[in-house]
Length: 407
Image 1 (cartoon, rainbow, N blue to C red):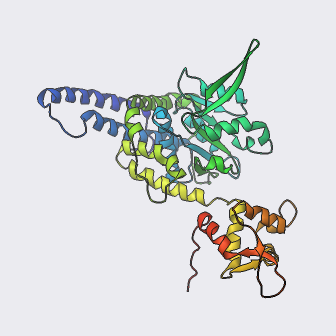
Image 2 (cartoon, rainbow, N blue to C red):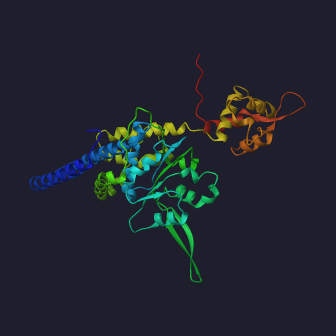
Image 3 (tube, rainbow, N blue to C red):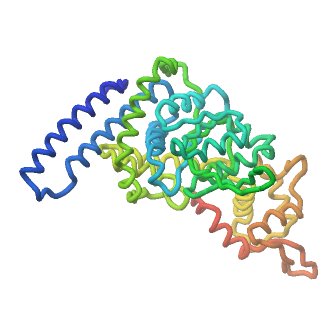
């Protein structure tokens, strides 16, 4: 298939094949009432979906430079999953993040607006507006395309707690936002559904509560040799809407199959990540062809990339402590702090303008259930410190296995 697929070609081909398949089914229905295996309708449906996915893939690729093939495939599958929201117990967010502006994040949302069902483009929206849009039952769940999301979690984060709550909770079916409504002299309660598909775009990073529920795509600026087609909505709206309508037509009869789908997860995709990738991989399996392999390759690559993000200070502290301890069975607090302060490129010398002290060390480790104790160093003085036995369990739970040193 050509890199640039015209949606009209796909649309006409799907209609023609559907008519041919209907005639074939009618003929076979009279001649053979004992047919086994997938029905011709199911076989045609799977083939049609693969072609539609290829069309969506090519359409996106004309306007957006993705950082990898896996990220490109993941976005196609995420867009399709938004058409079958009734089937899922949870919906993954997809987050386009970059360290600098002009990296293609906003363009990715703009192009998807033509492809997803009930799009709501959100920039600097009020909580009341967003909740009403999400809770509206008139047109079904919206697809929220939230640009400049870094402003929600930046310095003014406290002013946006309600929106943050929606983004955190709305990934699960049944999540609601409770409100009090005054009608005359009566105060009544109401619950607004918060469940919807959400795509995010912003600078920097996001809290773990969002990232752990997201397919994370780290965007970057186009290189000089990379070329895209200038996107003009009025020019490409009809083509995008044809692809959207093809997806909607497929989704109308696919909800039951998707609800019962249990896609097999590749190695390394488990727990919360398995929740995130269940819907995209179910879509990939339904499409058939090379999409099941592409979907799992995308899952493994993007999960691994997300795991490489900057760890929390707590995890960084546990990791540095494991390195400092080496083979020692115990270390005094004074020695630990001296060793932490000596680590190059570590944050322990400057935490909000002050170095980490014994109280700060104790506070951070207490969150993991580790407490200091009086150590027996062989003399009358028993200084405060920490034992390997008390740290071993948290090292195993929160840190990957250390890489063995080469001989």
